[in-house]
Amino acid sequence: MAQTRRRRRSKHRGTAAGTIETRGRTGRKPTSAEKGSPVSKEERRQARLDKPPSWRSSFQRALLATVVFDALAVVALKLSPAGVIPLTIFVVAIYTVFGYAFDSALHKRRQRKKAQTASPASRSTDRREPPRRRR
Image (cartoon, rainbow, N blue to C red; front, side):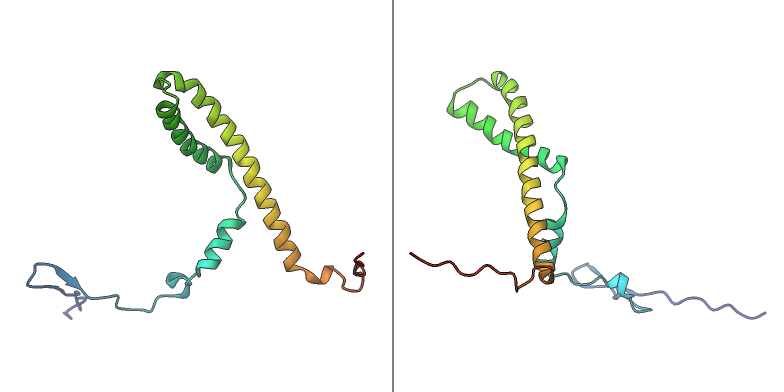
């Protein structure tokens, strides 16, 4: 009977310090999808700014701001921590709504500006206004 071939095991070599070193990746080369493309800092920033605002992110930011606000209210205004709770609920609600509105306005502004820079052909150069005279 023919003997079956056993697969060779990769070696783990121990060092004098007691750590175990393994060989790197062996076998087939990674595909382009597995490698992943190196994304520049500017591209990551653009991807982050292109995402529309969410209520969740506004709420989390409002919670963080409220913690700071409450700490200042307790220390500076000498309010009791129990007396700050109703104020906390009100501040979280206001900060969340205004934060979302502010984020939405900034997002719309960025998108308008991005659309203008992306399509300069839509603006015709022959319809410019003449320069104004100084008096």
